[in-house]
Structures are given as structure tokens and as C-alpha cells.
Length: 447
Image (cartoon, rainbow, N blue to C red; front, side):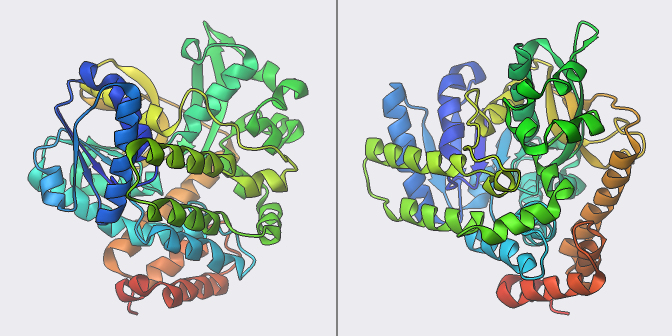
């Protein structure tokens, strides 16, 4: 089996490789190929992977290339985790809206739209290369905004493209821990879009467990979402929202917290990773130690602005059960070994959420095997979540159309329709601000 990782010089690639070391024999992996447009980043990540292999005591062979055709040719599975515009682009995504008093966050609000406008054309090009070079391959997409990107590439690959996010499963594990239960024993009734979902039920043998948790402030305070949203609001909803919904429910609080921060999340990561990648040339153990230290600081500050706005002064809850890499392995194993595991994925709706059409990419539990994900029925949902999901799906699709046509009017429309953008005038100013600071965006949207 050939596995290709596009964005193979990315900072989180060692997480996937470390998990592959444990699973290689079971998965019958023959070839792992890392692709990136930056050879220096590939070299640095290769040093870290050498350190992981030495520590593990066995080596899973990999090779690196900047040639996409070579990387994809004959692949069975392609992981994608690219960042078009790199972290410099993220800094722009976050800072431009803040200048207008609007949330600056890389996947939510205007930042997510700008990120998608840059990313979707590159991901569609990858999908076209796969269709030519590896027509039977599955694309397992981590590239953000994951739901939007997955829907765009499904126009080329159909349902052979699946989107992954570790946020829903991480929340489900934290909820299970708060309940004192093993998550593998429970059914999690989760529905929504990527970074816009709700957990409305937790069941075991017909017993509903979420209601009792929502009434217990002490247990709610024991995990991140409980502290972020607070017991009163969670009981009003009767559900636990995905952490990214904090940016919708507490938008003004978050903007104020970001403005009071000494540096944005994107600027922090940019400086941190510049230092890490600049140190290439170290041997494997030294590179691995540097990567781990950098990762610890990265994960500790995840969603720090939301936690600051909520008055939660602690660090991010590092998931002992894994996040990004666990989702990668779960999907790969389910497909390659036909395990029919139930996983929360970004996949074509079919009839899971009946108020959206069958092609809409949604984030719901799905049964996953060799034939790919089959989403389960979620059915009717509370009215306020239905309204937000319908609106945000329209925003997503308008953004996709803008990205693929280079239409300024559609890009502004997507921004103006977003509920976190207060007016059409502000939408125009934000888009013009993006074009002024991102030459590639100005070239792609010349009007």
C-alpha cells in the first residue's frame, strides 16, 4: 500500500508518522511519500522522523519529493494538510478583520473565508492530479477549512474525498471522561458542519447520559467546553457546542480578548516555527527533542483567546488519547481493513441532515469501511442550529464559487452573508484589506 502525505513538510507530520510506526505491519504499508513545495521543510521534518524511528527501534521507510505527480502516482491513500500562504498568510487572515472590530480567526469568520479563497484552487488542482495519477485513491483531507475544502474537491473526486477534524472526537472523549466512562462504550449524537457542531446526546444501552452531566456544574468545570461555555448557557442549549462555536456565541468577548493579547495566535506560531525550521541539519534525536518542545508550547496555547475571554486561565487540555494522528489512523484503518468503525467525519450529507441537500458536506457520525463513510441519520435539529447551519452552508458554497471563478463580488457576498460580519460595507473593506496585503489574492481576484 502506498500512502502519500501532501504537505509533508508540515509541523504535525511527525504525529502521523509516529502513529504509522505502530500500525505499518497491520496496514501492510509498502511506501510512504512526503510531498511539499519547500525542500527545506521536508529536510527538517525528515530529521524528526529519523529521530522517531530510532526511538521506536524500527524504521518505516519514507522518501521526500517536491514533484506532486511523482508523489501521487499510484497512491492508495493521500493525506492532505497544506497551508497555502503559510503562517504569514494566517497572520493576515487574523489581523485584517480585527482592524474593523471583527473576529480574526483562521477558520471562523472572515479569516476562514480568506484562507479558503487561497486554498481551494490548490486543493482542486491536487484532486485533479489524483484523478489522473491515482484514480482509485482516497483523499483524507486535513487541510482547513476542512468542510469547505472537502466539498470543493468532491466536485472532482466525488465521495472518495473525506474531511477530518479532531475537534469533535476530542470533545466526545472529554465528555466521556467527565462521565467516568470509556468513550468506546458510548454513542455520541453529534451533528453540524466543520467547526460548527453540537453534541446533543450521549447514550449507553438506551440510557441518555448528557442531561445529568449538564446539571452537574462540578463535572462541567472538569473539561474545556464546560469551562468555556458555562453551565447556565449549556443548560439553556441542552447541548454541548463544539469549542469553535464560542466565536459565535461570545464574538464580542473574543474580539476584546484578542485585542488585549500581546500577539495573535498566528504571529506566535510564525515566530515559533521559524526558529524550529531554521535549525535544520541536526541529527534525529536532537531534531525530535526540538520538535517536541515546540509542539508543547503550540498545543498549550491552542484557542488561548477563547479561554481568556471565558476567564479560563489554564492551559489547553492536551489529549492523552491523541488528536490529529488518531483521527488519521482511525480513518485509514477503517478503510484499509474494512472495520466499519463509527467516526465523526466531513462527508457528503446524503440524508443525514434532511434540511440540507445530499451533496452538502456535513460533519456527522459515519460508518466507515472499504466503501468509504456512510453517514448516519441525524434527523431534525433545534431551530436555531438549523438556521445557522443553512446560512453557513450558503456562505461556504458562495466562498467555493468565488475561489474557483476569481469573482470579487462573490467573495464580498460570502463575507457579507457571514453572521460575524456586521455589514456589506465592512465586508468590502475586509476583502480589499486582504487583497492589499496578499499579492497572490490580488492576482487571483483582479476585479
